[in-house]
Length: 303
View 1: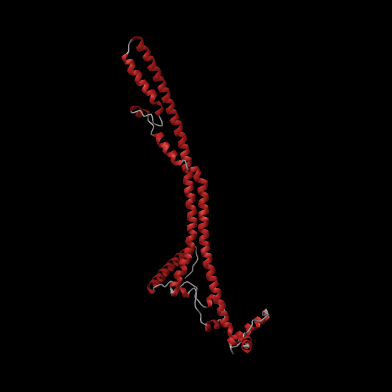
View 2: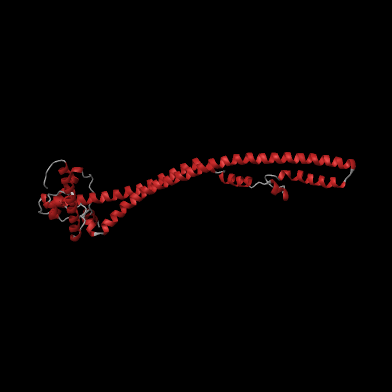
């Protein structure tokens, strides 16, 4: 049993008591790389390493561009909402009474004492307060017609006083309506102008943000269009083989690999011939006019 325990202890490997230093770790990794490389010369690996670095850079730039565009769209929307909020906070409290003022103005402009007196209503906002006085005048007129002598004279005096008071109160009501109408009109005009200004500024903010969003989306659409069309893609990027890269001495300047120039417009031969004939006719006409002008000046010149 003792021998078995000793063998068991001897077969178990314990962890090293000391950590590897950075130099030891670097040496270990370098030896591992030598084993993986085999007998290939160091200089041969520049093509592989360079390609890996190149693709790593492309991947990093692509992801970074995606993040930038995403952030840009978010920033545009955040700026839009912040600007819209500022406009609403500045204008909305001031413009809030506008609907009520418009309703009040419509009621004031519709005020007509003659029409109201045909069917008096005490709840009318403009002349309702005159209802009791109008009823009193009607009652006094009825009583005056039923009396005679001194009572008739007294009733007529009361009727005249009531009519005088009704005329005065009616004038006061009309003047008050006229004054209030002018006041409400001014307020409605000013607030309407502010409302239009607010609407215009909101439209400007939305248009500005929409233009920036459209530019970002246009760039994305162009990239999608280029990638979807092989002919267009060849003008913007290319997957070059190693021999071609070596032939260009590992220079990744884009014009060495892709044709970035716009293709020239193809013109049919018959159209080109027609345009050339028209140009010749025009040149002959100009030369003829020039020769005539020179002849008039006494200068002889043959073209």
